[in-house]
Length: 404
Ligand SMILES: Cc1ncc(COP(=O)(O)O)c(C=O)c1O
Image 1 (spheres, protein in one colour):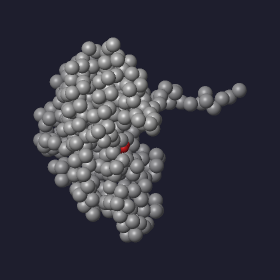
Image 2: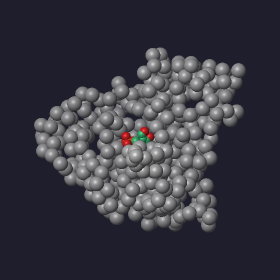
Image 3: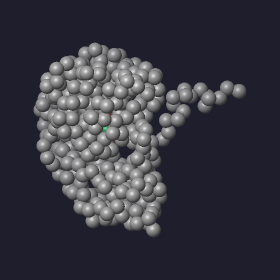
Image 4: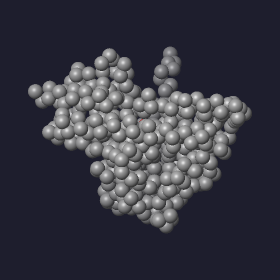
């Protein structure tokens, strides 16, 4: 008997349900404080601004909203993205921009067009789970480079690349600013060295930047893509992924990929096969939202809330966890990354935490190899400051129970 279940391609058999999604189901348990999710605070969505932008888009650009559109995106929204990046010091032409279904699709298209099974790619250790799963499905050999409080360890990267036994990577995926999960931000010097290594060894840097605009303290670092003029020969080696998920709304499913022409061309072809184009309606809505100045007007509200929540988390950590856990305290983004000082696995901690009615993400899921099981990710984006304080206090009690 033929069985459709046996038809599933091997690459898709062991991808697994994401633990983060499983944990997010616990969010609906009454009284549970979730420090696990990576979602934007829902009360921070600019509902009026998006509604007005959607109305204006339908009124003024009905055909762009409702008809099939160009695969690489509406010209007006690509131009708006190029202006958005220019305001952060990164120069690109609207012709370099490809609108995608979130930055997640941008990475998937890159892997499909650049990497064949058996090719090598480098990721951070730890890194975001989305790309890890894309690389796994693609049969790519994934190498890792460590992360410290200042992001990707470029000296370790250099040693890895110089090692004759290392397979030559085609691509390096990095979240240089307020990384998921580490919260770390690479200083300028590391970004420059990364560019120099890409030129010397010939690999594509994929800079994923969904959190860069969420800086609530300190000074902005330039994008890696914004430093290409300082490192001769680096421009063809850099792809920049951006997203409106964290600054407007993930439900829009809109992001963008800025790529050199030789890389962008096959991406457009792959996207054509995938979804023909990203929805015209959401693109036009974002175009009108940006043109109306709503992002600049609303961002301070989001940043103010995240600053307060992160501050509450930092203080609660100092009160309840400081003697047992080391933490990176970021100046933006959504995440704090911790490590149980005695090396105990945070998987073992999780059931105690759930009993205390708090959730977090055990850190081991963020590793392609050499997982540090004592790590954990806390998010401060969705809970209120009171919930943050209560959640961290509960975590302190869960850790005490684990060691009792
Ligand atoms: C580092 C990173 N990249 C990409 C994404 C996905 O973004 P998008 O909604 O634009 O696909 C996330 C979402 O959590 C993320 O943390």
